[in-house]
Each structure stands twice: as structure tokens, then as C-alpha cells.
Amino acid sequence: MGLDEAVRKPHERLAEAVAEDMGRVNALIAARMASEHAPRIPEVTRHLVEAGGKRLRPMLTLAAARMLGYAGEDHVRLAATVEFIHTATLLHDDVVDESRQRRGRPTANLLWDNKSSVLVGDYLFARAFQLMVETGSVRVLGILSNASATIAEGEVLQLTAAQNLKTDEAVYLQVVRGKTAALFAAATEVGGVIAAAPEAQIRALHTYGDALGVAFQIVDDLLDYAGDMTATGKNVGDDFRERKLTLPVIKAVAAANAEERGFWVRVIEKGDQRDGDLETALRLLARHGCLEATREEALGWAGRAKDALSALPDHPIRGLLGDLADYVVARIS
Image (cartoon, rainbow, N blue to C red; front, side, top):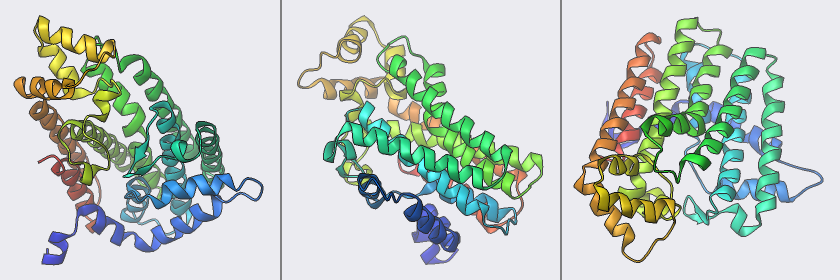
């Protein structure tokens, strides 16, 4: 590996590997987010798209298809589908979470209103299903429609589990597998399906995407307590202020004595948060080694993702996907 390759991050090298395809995806997204009768739709969507983001999920679809020798055009439609589903969920999530910032910019619901965010999200879901159908693959339609349902199910489960101290790591994993990993897994899996790959390779792609998505979300939750706002685009402690019971806190609650548990009941279940409570929470997480334990779990899931790649053909993109799994957790090293 040359110096330039070593300096560039894995997702940047992956983007370079699929740049030509990604250009077509971006053109398709721009064309399909247009609306002749409702100019609010492209306004809202463009705001979110132009905020940046790595476009990781559609890149995974393109990478999987190319790695397995696909030479058609349906992978471009599917990558755009994946990005539309992701963007729609972001619009809805910001309304549910009453978020005011995403990727360092004001959220669409703050700039416009909740109604616009929800309805534009619905529009993007509909556009996604139109694109799926255009591939003519019932199997692809099944994978992506199931993923869409699983994402919604995970978000609803999080509503009931997020502020309940009885929520354990198994329920947390179920939420993460729903709201985040389902789309990663679908994104990689459909790349294999459209390439008519052997079933063992399609399963490996699903396993890789699932494990990568779990690692990605665990790291995201960890960075909320141990991250740098300039790098993450979100304030440290946002999840705490929103009373989200994520993995670091679940571990702290499990290890808590009676006094500490009383603190978590007050700030998470009852929502009675006071000055200095975030600092107290950080001290408790440190006292019980919760951040390091969470990091170890993220590393474990990244390892599972890399292990799944052994079933796939020897190809430069396979190496990039392995590096990507390492990079996802390197953000917390």
C-alpha cells in the first residue's frame, strides 16, 4: 500500500473504487427526488443530501455487485433505493427525536416543520419502492421491503425500551439490528442477489452487512459519551439528554449499586435532569469500565464482519470492505 492509500480512509478508497457508478447513483437520486407539483420535496431532500454524509450504504451495494462481477445497471437503481430509504428514516428520526442538528447543520424539521419532514420522508419511501420494482426482481423487492419494515419495527421498539431501565443488552441488540443493521445487511445482500452470486456468497454479504451495521451503531452510541463534536457533528451527551438507554448506560445500570441506580432512574426514567448530571453519568460510566466494555463489543462485531468476507472472491474490493470494518471501530480507538 502506497503512502497516499495509507493516508486515505477506507470509505474514501471505497468511494474511489465505485466512483463511476456512484456518479450515476447521484444523478438518479437528483432526478427522482424532483417533484413537478411540490417544490418543498426537493428543497427538503436537497438540504439533507447537501449536508454531506459518506453515502456508505449505497456504496456497499455497488461494491458488492462489482466484486461479484455484475455488469448491468440495476445495482445503480438499488444503491439509489438504499439511499432513499436511509434518507427517509433520517427525516422521520429527527421528528421523533425532536433533533435540532444533523451532520453539523440544522435539521429539516427545524428549518421547515415536522409535517414537511414526515411527508417528504414518505415520498422518498415511495420513490424507493418504485426503483426496487424497476429491477424486476421479486427477491430484491422482498429483501428491501423486509428491511424497511424491520427498520420501522426497531424504531418503535426503541420508543418503548429507550427509557426503561429493565431494557437489557439483548433488547438493545434487537433495536440496533432493526434500526441500523437491517439496511446495511440489505444493501450488501441485494448487491449479491443482482449479481446472481452463489447462495453462500449472498449469505456472507448479509452477515457482513449485519455485523458492520451493529458495530457502526454501537460506536455511534459510544461516541455520544466519548466523541468530539467537530468530528461527529453531534453534541456529547445528546443521547443522555434525550434519555436514550444505549449500551454504555445499560452496562452502567447492570453494574450499579442502589445509589447509582437511583441516579439512573431519576435522569433516564423520570427525566429529572439537573446541572452536573451529565458529568455524573460520565463518572459512573468510567467507574464501571462501561466505555471500554462497549468498545470491545464493537470490535467483536467488526471482527465478525471481517470473518464473513472469507467466503467471498479474492478481489481488491474485498480488502476495502475489511478495512472499512476496522475503520468503523477505529473512530473510538
